[in-house]
Length: 139
Image 1: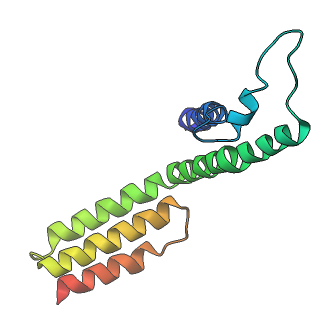
Image 2 (image 1 turned 90 degrees about the vertical axis):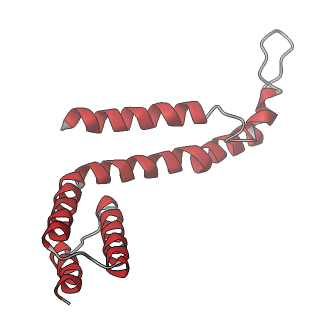
């Protein structure tokens, strides 16, 4: 279980590192490029501009990358619960009578909402949701 977690973390770091140098993702880097030359007569970037670029990179790239990584890790942590929930919904659908289109749409909606909440690491009462779905089956 550790290997997939480490892969998510390292992939996120690699992606953030690449994006941190991308002028399309961090437009202020275009300004810094003017000072990106070597030689006896090159000038250093103004300190204020460099600090602003650092803040932009943190806000535009690093923070979103960390948030996305955390979401992926939470989804991994909850993958077994998601798989079990999907399996129980499938079993319920197979056992039940043919659902009408409206009932089927309701089940799809509840299933999707529940899976998204589980992915986000929310505490979800799966039994209650399955009960709601099952009520449609008994009507």
